[in-house]
Image (cartoon, rainbow, N blue to C red):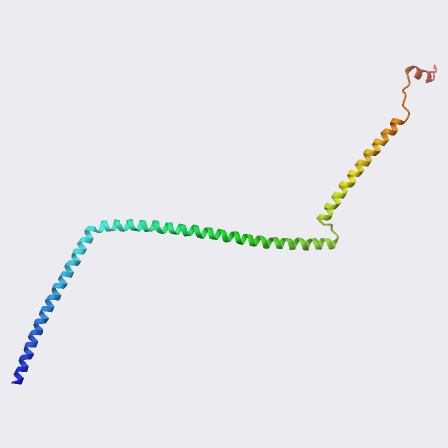
Length: 177
């Protein structure tokens, strides 16, 4: 009898599980159908509102592009100003180094020319100013000498112009030929 009870319990368990299986299968089937219908509804709605959604997405894309473009322009101007600043710094440093190099070159050239006996610009300038001084002194002396000569000439006996009668007297008579 134990066997029979056991068999009956097994049958009832199989029947309950079969019942459970068929209820579960029905529930899954209903759920799958609802999912299918929801997908179909979404597809239909997407087809109907697709144009509107597309236009909305285009507008959002244009707005986003404007924002990114303005941010990029701001960054570009910022980077450009930084690069300009850096370029001016580099130019200033290069100018300083160039000035140092130029002064070293000038010093060495002047030293070499000095060893060769070539007068420097300073020497030439000093000579030019000395020449100007001497020229002024010579001109002053020439004016002074001219003034003295004029005074001496004025002190000398006046030149008398002979009168016409006196000229006739002094002339020897002409001989008749």
